[in-house]
Image (cartoon, rainbow, N blue to C red; front, top):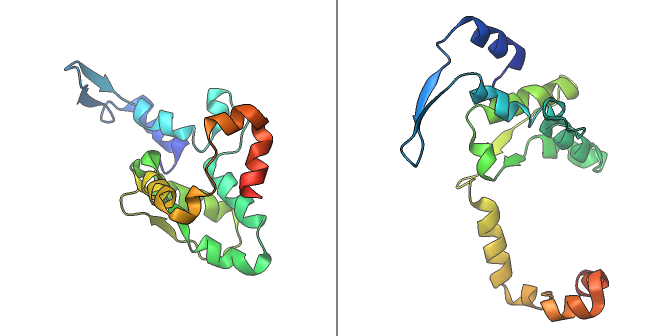
Length: 157
């Protein structure tokens, strides 16, 4: 992930130093250049791929701003990254930079990369599903077929 997308793009247009060789699992060799930072840029600027959603920094900001004002400072100091995409080199620094633009200068921001961040969500789901208290909340396919989406209200509300 580029810390400054426009700077990286400009630099890449004037230099071949950005190019890197990769070998794919099937043995094919490819050389990529600015694709290395153009692809993950969609996380921050979805409009570059034709999507009208907010970028990840704005989503984090909007989510925290919907919380109680007394919790916001603590939430900004506990932004946890998890999932395979979050292990992309440079994502943590770029996210912090982009959130910094959205908040007041005195707001402390701390981004935490979860240990085992690429499988943390799966681990959490695995642990949750093994709890006996959670098993009461399961919905079978037959129940869903019989009652439709409203069965979820019975099990979770």
